[in-house]
Image (cartoon, rainbow, N blue to C red):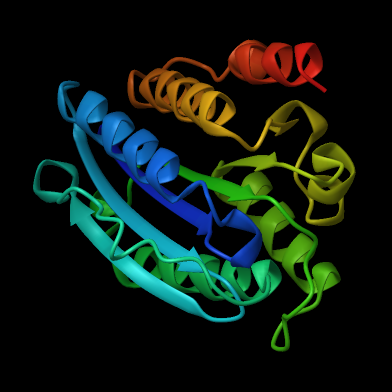
Length: 214
């Protein structure tokens, strides 16, 4: 029996190259969460901040209970261990679903990954391992992965992790670009939570802004 529960997982880059975007990132994230709170349906939110290490800010918190992120929580530092953050977080959610009652496993699971630099610090996983895990979860469980990158080729990078090109987009890493990023993600999440298919145009606004200012 299908429930109308959504598992929403954010992996947010907070490495040193994000310096100067703290306020925009925090504001965009908080606005997106507030918009989601206005929509019906059960949703659990996990937020992982990563640099050369990962910090779990929210661990499957009910959407209605997610507090506002602060700039004290989102402090930039260090290098970029995206692959480790992805591998660890997928395994964590996978384990929870594995031991839950079938009727309690969320009908929808979406990972939203934002990064503005090349992977350069992972030690526990390889890109090949993460790609195999992601492809398995997409095919076997219908999980969705969105990859939003700056200062890299987002489509090429996402492909190395098993994420399709229509689920990847480059964004302009500044205040305007970050705002558009979170507005677009909010729309994509809302569609999924409404049991509507995620269309290829979810990233059109992000891409249009990137193309017009690059």
